[in-house]
Length: 137
Image (cartoon, rainbow, N blue to C red; front, side):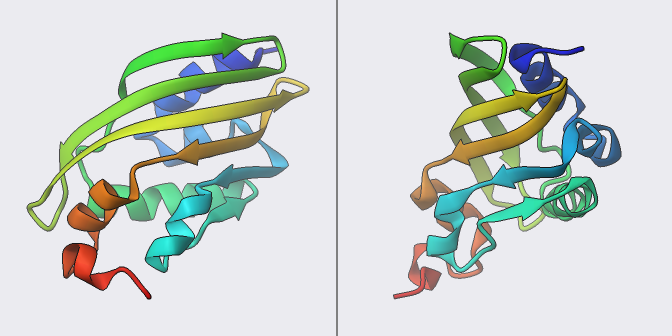
């Protein structure tokens, strides 16, 4: 049975294979990016099927998206907190550089919660058609 650290590293390594990454989650597991709501985007998805679909959509817009430079900051069997980086070019031609902070909660060898935080200015500049001008009021 995988612990929290092993699950996070498996998720980050397997991210480019959405079905494989989504299978790491419990049936009611949540991938949460709560601050994306500020950009008018969904703040999270629940369950392996929804997570797989979310990851597939992300990879359509960021075909070379891959995590790198992972630093584990807190590590217990059931929870891990880490920072990990992305540096890629999106399908729209814009560069996307990001430092994510993620807290993973493990339950019975699966991911129950992966809550990620990111710099919304970098995300808006890269992902929204009008950049930061498109951030909802």
